[in-house]
Image (tube, rainbow, N blue to C red; front, side):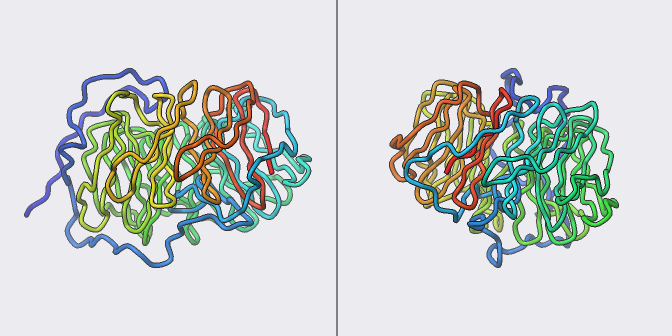
Length: 400
């Protein structure tokens, strides 16, 4: 069969939280393969792809390069507040944790390094006159990486808090960096996914999409997968930046995908959660709540044979990984744009109602909650027996 790329309409609307609802050209109900480029075989699932973050670190958004959102770190059955840190502005950036240090960005354009045990500030780094939005730090060796709303990507020394190098893109950066060997991947609102040299920031390659790149790529066997505001789902080979696969989504995709056992799952602005087999490119299932039809902005976690995701319908949804059937839903009091995390059979989910919820992963029963009194858009980070999350009023919370 001959594959060919169909023309796609580029929309001016940003892949953002308040995107107006509209009629979509296509739906994942008619998911179709647009392009499998000649000579580029899709990598097989398996190998060393991570399913959990290590117990002693949460080095990037969602904890690992597969973006599973699951930690090996054990948390107490009932959390206690260990410390808070009052930042200079709202915190939409999700924290990274490595070597006993918490890294987080703020809307004032400050990247902060804090001691995980005490909450004491070690250093702060300013991006200048522009803020840090949803881009979350990633740590590799002695460098921490983050993007800002002015389109600058920063590599900062973890010991000194000084810039090692910067790279300029031509659009806002709301994607979070992913580090694979000697390369760091980052998406920009200029429509490109970039691969930069970790050591010096030199451009290795850039991959062009047809609209903003909001999502963070998930990595599986040498391929970076991400949805775009161009209504496509992309697979890009990390070694050379060549397209491997491009699927018609028919909807904006702001949520980052999660990959487990060669299958990818993600939510769309068309009110769906989608499962695709990365080897066959076939739609595994499509989930949509029977009554409540709202976009998914949150990124999913994969644990205990379930896909768990927050929705703009104010719910946390748990979906059976194998079938796409609902396992349970839990209703909060506001939209859930925060991406849930899991540890020890529990789901930790923030909501714009200001509460951090702890839910039983098997049943969805509420086990505990904490009211921060400000919306939670950032996502939890879990490591070393601690959970860290920031709020819209600029407070960073550490529980343990």
